[in-house]
Image 1: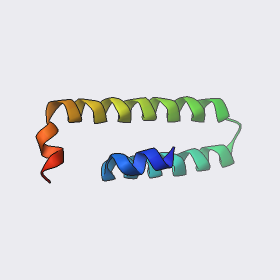
Image 2: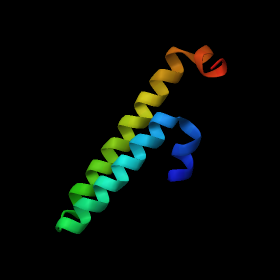
Image 3: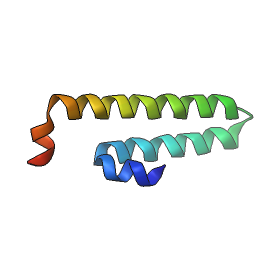
Length: 65
């Protein structure tokens, strides 16, 4: 999944990195695997939704940095 986030945008990559580190610490601290999975899925859907909305709103901005 990290391969898809790197091609999207630098902000998404940073969000994914922080999400994975938070998930790693949560997994180490206690038996909250289901919560971690739900949070990661929610963050992934939020990132994808935000990415699609930003691309739909300003398609020219992505072509001309």
